[in-house]
Structure formats: C-alpha cells, structure tokens
Length: 527
Image (cartoon, rainbow, N blue to C red; front, side, top):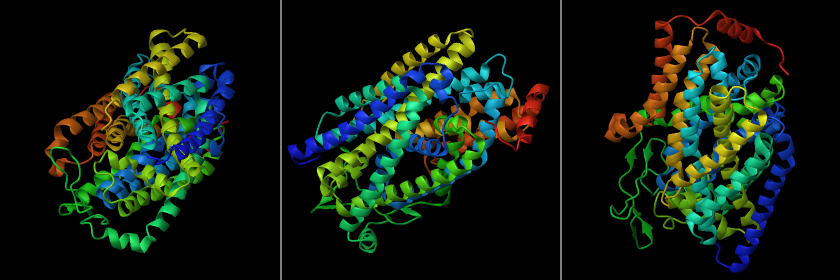
C-alpha cells in the first residue's frame, strides 16, 4: 500500500490517464464495430502482425503473468514457476508455428467462419449443429471462470495499492472492462491489447531491473535464497510452514519458517510442462490467427510473439524470487503472495512510476478479460442464437444478444471472484485446462487428420471437458502419481476419444474431405 496520501493521488492520476486512453480507443472503434458481427467479432480480418502478436499474447497472459506467476515463485520457489513458464513458452511457439497459418486459411475457406465453434461446425459438416452447441457451452463455462480470475486480480490490485475494499474494487474493475468492450468490439480490444502489451512488458522489465539492483544483484540474491530448502531447485520445491488454522506462514524472529523441501520429480515436471498444451485450444489466441489480414504476415507475428513471451515470463519469475529476498516475511499466504509486484513497486519507485507499473498490471487484467467477454458473447450470439435458434437473425439482433451476454458473463465473473482469498493461479489453471483439453486435440486433428469425423469430434469435445472436472475433483485429490495437472490426462483422453470413435464410425462425407484436401494443398496467400 502507498504510504502517503500525496503519493497515492499521483499514482491514481497516472492510472486514470491510462484508463481514459483505453476508453478513447473503445469510442474510436465503436462506430465500425456496430456495422456488422464480422467487424464486432474479428475486426473484418484486418489485423497487422504487430497488433496480432501483441494482442494475442497480452490477452493470453492476463493478470496471471504479473500477479499469479510471480506469486507462485515467491511462495514456493523456482521449480513450479520455471517449468510452468517453460511449458508456456514452448507451447506459444509451436502454436504459432503449426496452427496459425492452416487455421487462417481454413476458416476463410470454410464459409468464412469467424468463431472457433463455427469453424469446428463447418469443418465437419455439422448440419445438426451439435458441435456448435457443445463447443459454445464449453466457452461459456470456462470463460466465465477465466473472467472471474481477472476481476479477482483487479480487486487485489486496487485493494492492496490504495487500502480499499477488495469487493468494491473488483466490482468497479468488472464494470469498466465490460463498458469499453461493449463500445468497441474486437478491434477496440485488439488495439488496446497492443498498447497494453507494451505497458505490460515495460512494467515487468522495469521492476525486474531496479528490483534486482535493490536485491544486491543476481549472485547475492541467489546465494541468500539457497538458504531456503528447495527454493531455487529445479527438482525440489519449497514448502512454507503454515499455521493449519489460519493458513498463514509461521514467522519467528522475523524469519519465515519452511518445512523440508518437497520432491519435484519427473512426473511433476511433465505435468507442469503440459501447460503448453493449452495453447492449441485457447479461443482468444486462435482468433488472432483468424483475424490477421494476410497469411504470410503470421511469420513476423510469430517472432514478435515469442520474444514478448520469453522476456515477460523470465522477468515475472525472477520478480517473484527477488520479492522473497527483499521482503521475506511480508506476504504470508498463497493469495497474498500474488501482490509481490505491487509490494516491490510501491516500496522502491516514485508514485508516478508506480502508476505506470500498476497500469501495466491493470493492462494485463483488461487485455484478457475483454477478450474472454468478447469470445463468450460471440459463442452465444453467433453460434447459439444465430447458428441454432434463429438462423435469419439480423445483424442488429446479433449485436444486441452479444452485448446482453457480455453483461451476464460479467455478473457471473463477479460471483466467482467474490472471495477475497481466491488464488488467481488456481482459477486460471482450471479454466486453462478446460479449453486445452476440450478444444486443443480437436483443433489439431481438425487441421491435420483427414479421417477425423463429426462423431469423433463430438466425443473428443465431451471427453476432454468432462475429464478436466473428473480429474480435478475426484482423482487429483488422491495425490501421489494421481496428483498431476488435469490438463495432461484430459488432453490425452480427448485425443484417444477422437481417434477411437472416428475409426469406429463411418468416414467423413466427401465434401468434408474435399475441403480438407483443398486447404492442405494451399501454399499461396489468402487475403
């Protein structure tokens, strides 16, 4: 929390300038966004490589990057944060490398599909709209959870920074994000994400560089952290000694206590690396591939994206480690540890600089939640309302339903984020697993396996989404070998379901395989 009233006012003014900038972007694009659902949901396929790359990664990482990941590193050390970050970095690169171009071509050839459920439906000739319905429900369920994580991050940001009530700040964050997303649609979201991506990486680099100096440099920091059992090991994990009644880490004579280091074996490493599998099913990222103006610009976008991701993830992990070195007994619960970047910033920077850094955290929150809201509204308005219930719906009605859905998802997200002790990392990990397991295998088989059919697609969707719940709430609590991240087993189950059911049923229709062959044969440009 900022110590002086004057300092708090300067920080707040800086953040208000940023908020006004984002609102102006929404107002600027509001007229164009209202012309058609194509403009509102994918911006008329007009994104350039810089905007496509930066908006994809900014919307992907969310407040989790600046709060959740540093919090994990602060609370239990290097291993969990490092292997998660490595999985995400590798997953980002492979997704841009093998999925982006074929998906961009396929969505345009498959009846100009502008949402991921719409693409799946047209890819398999889904005349009964079963895939459309199921995939839209998956988006609604898991994006509601995702949105809640962003609102929780907003509540923690303003509550910690200004000493204000968490729930009030969370609610105001939700209202602001909903309003500017309603105004400008996809283009407003992407252009603001571009700005926010720059602010996010700038904030991370600034805190990393200055904070490391205050910690005495890399060598001194690592030497001190080695005294904590398992804290800076790749195959061990620190275990804070917490009071069973309060959940707070025990502190004696100003020194936080840790138990003996826990094991971090190969199964846990593979489980954590599996975060990277989630990218193949992330609608907010995949839509940036769909919306780029030219296929050949995806190569440049990929390079921009992977540099941004690598730098940001590295800085975020180190910030968590240096936070434990600088303030070892300041954040005594897993939830509180997610405020480590706020603590570092408010301690060592001028209030105006704090405002810029806090705008970076707000940018991370907004750049994801607006994308989640937009993707969820498109699932209801385009895929459910127009695709199933009212096929002759006017553009005006589609836009009305989409904006009504934005309001409903916002309310649901507020309910999920209502608990001030919620841990952002845990909320995000569940939603990430949901999308990765339900959509990831289906996306890969849709683009690269000719024999996949509609029955297999439905089986993969249902099996992947269901296994996330089953593993998370019934199998994982058993611990031991069963304690792996639910994304990995659910992803594998979905793959098996797609292959087994596709081979056990009739081959896809001729028109489906003809379209597949046509897209696979394309090497040139699609504009």
